Image (cartoon, rainbow, N blue to C red):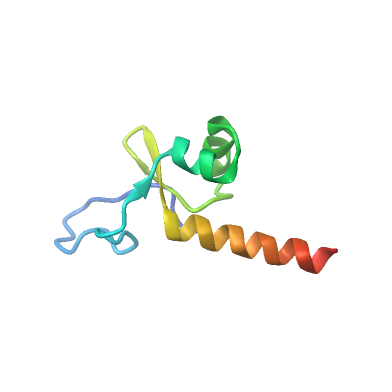
Length: 81
């Protein structure tokens, strides 16, 4: 899932994995979308179980990445039945 930290560096084009036109979700927004507790989302982000970036002390998530991850998990569950 890649690195969980945001590197600012001297890259004039910005971070290669962040689309500036797509808003980032907060822990609370992801938790509401997935119907989980915010602390569960934080734990999953720390362990690399969901795609996330840490900006300072807060986690941020791209909506597209969360939806792709959910779709992937849904396919795995269907195949396991």
